[in-house]
Length: 268
Image (cartoon, rainbow, N blue to C red; front, side):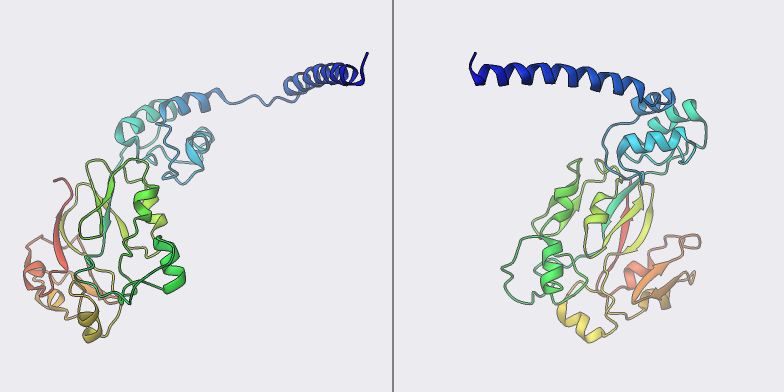
């Protein structure tokens, strides 16, 4: 018998006994899983987006079964999934769905570029290498990193070179928010109706803001001064509204000379 056949036979015998050993140890050292985890896992949508704060649906199911998480963390499944989880583990099934909103209107026709960018076509790469491809250091870079990480096809690049979110599709998983190096994508409740500033420029130099971006907040504070409810204040150069006091009268929107304040109706 040739050395090749002997080697092959030995390998087959060794593989057989190793398979038997692995099967034995698998059964001997097997950890019995809580059947509740499997029941929860069947209810979850399987998107593995991480919006719940756990490493995928398996991690969330284990945390739920162990009593370490609430049942309203799955933004993808929303209220229907929360209702099913409430039957399995109990808890508050009230889910408040959110969607992503870009707090920037600095399209290339409004926000000046520093120059020709020839690096990697990525928002994060542009942020690391150039700080920003625009003179506004806080503006959207427009390379669509948020689009690439969206698992639901809810974001597309508009003709103005800014990402546009389809609120009807957006699950509020927040993957785009985590990916954006500028941190200018915010989670807004889907039932929100009211004024929101769509600018993230923190530069307090009004002249510089106006020079660099035609859509940037120039810190004139007319929204603050004219609000009849006195519910707007400037925080780090951006108007922030106390929506517990806001009556949605629209005065801040009318008075804003740059139209930074926009009326958002997330249900539309």
